[in-house]
Image (cartoon, rainbow, N blue to C red):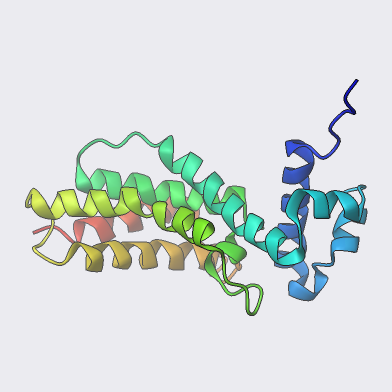
Length: 196
């Protein structure tokens, strides 16, 4: 009779979530495999069995953030209206960041000095931009958006959304600023600003 598998997907996700929490709350020095295993009430053997090494764990953390982001993006129904679709994609970007704030720093900042994701993880992160790039390209080709290099529009929109979300996650917005009320208005104004 085979032995039951104890190092399963549920444990893998638990370890990744806790690793992200340690990183975002205490910085890279807090990410000790021994501490991580203790916090999740498992063994360091389980961590090594699931990830291989600390750099592999960090790479898995990076990839997991983009997998979750991709799942949320894939659930968005795009309308074919480039302005409306930019707003929808911007909203899901924020929803994803707020759902997994402990993964956001590893995805978009140099949370761990010297960390470089492997090729597969980089490709996964890059694939997350595909809906934005397609929406912008379609908007330029259909004449809705200005005749500007689609990469300029896409990166500008991404930077705009990333900036607002980062300010919100880091608590850098004024107390009187209600992101929930203003975020969609700001997204729509930004998208409309690219109209021809």
